[in-house]
Amino acid sequence: MTAPAPTTQRLRRERVPAVLVLEDGRTFRGQAYGATGETFGEAVFNTGMSGYQETLTDPSYHRQVVVMTAPQIGNTGWNDEDDESKQIWVAGYVVRDPARVPSNWRSRRSLDEELANQGIVGISGIDTRALTRHLRERGAMRCGIFSGGAVADDAALLARVQQSPEMKGADLCAEVATTEPYVVPAIGEKRFTVAALDLGIKAMTPQRMAERGIEVHVLPADATVEDVYAVNPDGVFFSNGPGDPATADHQVEVAKGVLGRGTPFFGICFGNQILGRALGFGTYKLKYGHRGINQPVQDRTTGKVEVTAHNHGFAVNAPLDKVSDTPFGRVEVSHVCLNDDVVEGLQALDVPAFSVQYHPEAAAGPHDAAYLFDRFVKLMEGQRA
Image 1 (cartoon, rainbow, N blue to C red):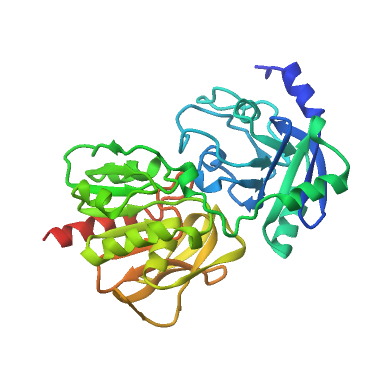
Image 2 (image 1 turned 90 degrees about the horizontal axis):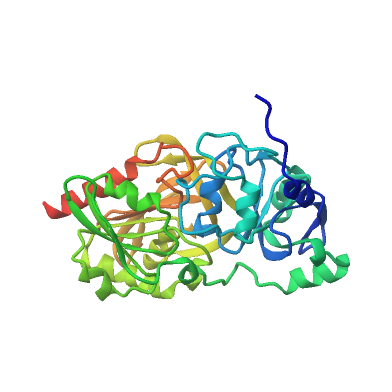
């Protein structure tokens, strides 16, 4: 059967000129993809070859312009089942060779159409390999995408990019979190209750807990210790989220309150960084971060190497070669990235708490790390016993 021809609207949008301007002055020219206009954010690259719908709807990407290293994006279109939140959160989207016509039985519209529907400004047809190499060498940096009537003199565009806010020092989790508590019920018999602080939580995370008989009470990012314990939790979970963990003073104090009461604690991504700060470690910004679904991490408690999904530009500064003494007892680094020795997990030895920097919910990504939810269950079982 012959594939349908691209629509006139699609062809017209492909001809709209667009330009991407980095804060160091490097410029890439292509065509508009998604909405036309202008947008600003931190330019970062994602190495995943699939899972773009989950990536785009991950709140951790708030205020970032995501560059896809895989050359062909959009082949499976956009469906109504795989969103990880209520909307697309990226500030902008950069692809090399977008699919002209999507092909998947669940597809309801093209990626291009969904980006346009949600007002996400993107660019296509540029050398994303050259852009990725530039970001690896120079580091993640601010950028702007300009298309249609927003295109102007390069010097003027560069000045606007350099005036845009930086990611370091950005306090963003409250901008993406729920404003009202809600409950994700346990699937089957209810075994535990967990209070989950939403710092940018993905929908699959409480789903993975619900599959294990956990009733998840999702709370706003500004929830207090009193709010957490009002649901009588068997465990406390801190989610992923955007921004600089150095700004999360309120959440750090809540984490300290949980540690002080000895309630089982599990954190991922931003939650890992908050646990690190609560234990007395510092955090720092990575040169270009880890973003993709193919990052090798070793679980040092078992020696097993896992292929994992990442999305983080900050990391915990904790020693790899020793057990650290903290205000809450001894702590060790439980997971480490094999590419660059970045801390990817913490394990408290004297209180029931652990965390990982990556995304075990596997949306999108491999399922190698799903056991971490089982580890959380065992922690709660042990505490109850």
